[in-house]
Image 1 (tube, rainbow over the protein chains, first blue to last red):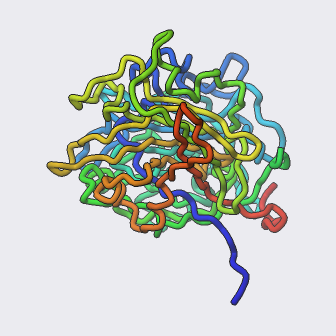
Image 2 (cartoon, chains in turn brown, green):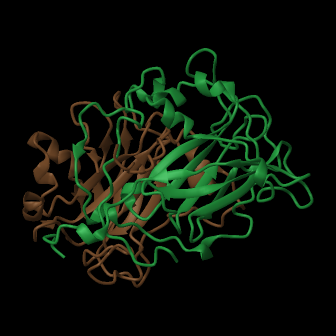
Length: 205
Length: 246
């Protein structure tokens, strides 16, 4: 016999269901007066936030090509200097005017999601390497049994993307473009395909 | 605070054998919404081991009281009054302080307050069905609510959801992000439910079933159910790879 390790098991995931908005964005779902605003809604920046203002928009699309109209999307990103506003950030203090976290539902009639944020800086990886600027995504919805994690990268960062150790880990190079947004001025379009030929790369992190 | 020293270690690998797979055809909506290719494994980087902090000052007094937070003055929703309480832990067994816990549910008749909900059971004018709280320094949380009713849903021709409360939990790292559901001890619908059955491990299902907790029942007021939630654990920073570029 040996000593038991004694670790607990993570609670099993269950789908967010069709009414995730009630819990996470109640004002959006029509329940007004309980919370003043929906947590994580609105622009991620304020007047004092450092960095280039950008819009990130897109759809979460199912295997038939139909946009989901009941998804909830969260993003988490570094500030303009590549620092996270988190106690686990050990390299310095992030911009106090930028939390770096946002949450939005897809539009109930079209499914489109929109974030108003800033472009993040590059973030260090192991061994002195750097990750190209990116935004981390987490997607839940009815029919999604466990939250899906992916990343959006920036198309104008060709050199940094080519050196990015996470993108570099993707064996099938043909899939890399699923993580790179399309740019039009300061607006980036990032569609998340759950299935099909252009299925987005999702991560087990 | 027990967790004053910020933690920077990577998270334990997620046990995907215990979580539901993406493709579970008996839960029909998953068929077109399940990624079909293998997930790309990624040891957590700075982007996943970090996460935002939610301060207790964002909470209002009634945020964790679903009996009163939507009720008209002097009125209350209809149904069984219950207290739901427990701890948010991580896989190492310790409490997770400062975790954001959000919850939502149907009313006593099994009806949600949502624009797209069509079940014929009535709305309760005094019940919104949403609340939230932040765990204390020991990871403890509680809220008061009305026991939700079971309800039919369009999947099979006669599928019913067991009574349940949805939970969204935000721990310390974005990699810990979790949504799950709490079920009630003794509900026969649990073992018939296609969504419950997406979980391949019977023990993992049992860990989502909250027992009646008579010790914390408030006499002449409300019964208590105890529900602990476990988030992923993380390695001790002491043994992190020093070559990490920071």
